[in-house]
Image 1: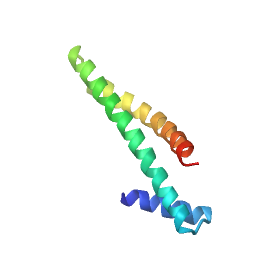
Image 2: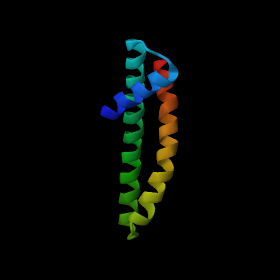
Image 3: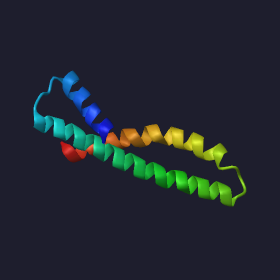
Length: 87
């Protein structure tokens, strides 16, 4: 939550928005983005780890690269969804 507030303050300062309502909107957007992205990434990471381990493969060789690649994609998709929900 501290990072959400810091990001919202930085966005407000850079964007020149000084109202409290705009500040709250930034915080809500960041919270929605985080909840959506983290939920999807946890499900994907757990699924990949379970599938690779059940096949006798080392999950470290698969989970880390897949999670890194999908984290960027999921975060971008979550930003789009959050903006669509707020705006």
